[in-house]
Image (cartoon, rainbow, N blue to C red; front, side):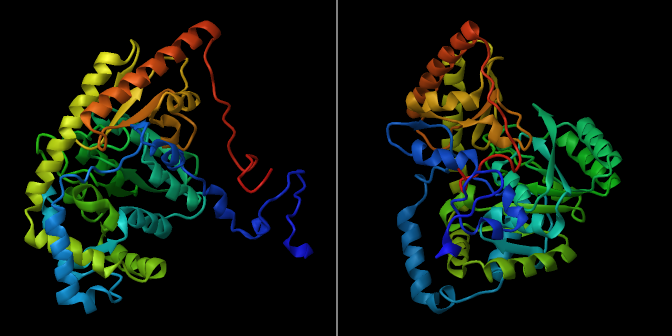
Length: 439
C-alpha cells in the first residue's frame, strides 16, 4: 500500500498526486487559463458574462440544418460515420479554398489540412517548430489559447506592443534584433491581424507588407490566425498575409465563428513541405478529424447561402458592438479608455492607474458581472490595468446592464485606490508556485 501514498517533496509540501514525479517536465507549463476558470461562475443566469467568446448561434437555420444532417445519415451514413483521412474530406478542402479566395488567397486543396478546430492547428504548428526554450513573437496582448500551446511546448513568448492600427512594425524589428542579439532562437511570429482577440484592433493594410518583409529578413515564419476575418461590420474583407507571402505564412482558419463552434472544424493552409509534416502530426494526435462533422459543414456550404448567413452574423454582432460602445461611453468613469473594433467579438478596456482588474474580478462577480482580466492575455504578467469585454453572446440589453454593473464596481475600486493607495497583486511565477497537486 505504501507505493500509493502521497510522497513528500523536500520543500515540506505534501503531494496529493502520487504520479507527480512521473510527469514530463513540459507539464509544468500546463495551467488552466483564467478564462476557463471563469466559465463555472459566468454561466450562472444571474451573472451578465462579458468574459467568454461564445458565438451567438441564434441566427442559424436549425430546421434546415437538422434536415441536412438526417440526409447525410440516410444517404452517406456508412461514409460519414467511418474513419477518414488525416488530411480531411477532399470536397471540404476545395470549399475551404473558395472561402480563402475572398481574402485574396490562391491555394490548392492539397495544401489544406482539416483540423479539430483551429486550436488543434495551432498546437500542431507549435509542436512542429518549437523546441524547449525557442522564442515565439506574439502581439501583446495575445490570444490566451495560443499562450497555452506555447507554454505546453516550453516555448518562450516575447510580446510586441500594438496600437490602434495593430502590430507596430518598428517594435517588431526591435524585438527581433534584441532577441537575436541575446542568442535566442526565434521560430515564428504569431499574429491575429483582423479584429484581434483580445484587443479588437485590425492590422493596417499598409503595415502588412512591411511586417512580412521584416520576418523574411530575420528568417522568421509567420503564423496567421484568422477566425474573424469575414466578420467585418462594414462587410470589408482585408487581404490575408498569406495572400502576399504564401511561402512564409502558415494560415489558420475556422468555421467556429462563421458557422458552428460545436462542430470543431478548422484548417491549416501551409507551404507544401510543412503540409506533409502537419498530416503526420494530425495522424499522431487524432488519427483523423471527424468525417461526420466535416460532411455537415460541406453540405451546409454547398446548399445554404452561407455568405448571407455570415451577413446576418455581422449585423447581430454589430448591434451588440454598438450597445457595448454606447454603454461604455455612458457608464464608465473618467480615466478609462477602450478600443473601437470594426469587426469580431471584443473590446479591450484600460482602467485608471491604481486599479488591478484581476484583483477586482471577485468583487465584479459578486456584483453579478464577469469579464476577462488582462493578465490572462500576457505571458509575462502584464495586463493588470486591462480587461477584455466580449459582446458577441449577450443581448444588447444585457450588455448595457452588465456595463452598468461593471462601472459601479470600478467606481468603488477607484475610491478605494484614492483612499488607501493602489492594490497590486503579488505575481509569483515559475515552479515555486504551489500547484493543485501540492499543499
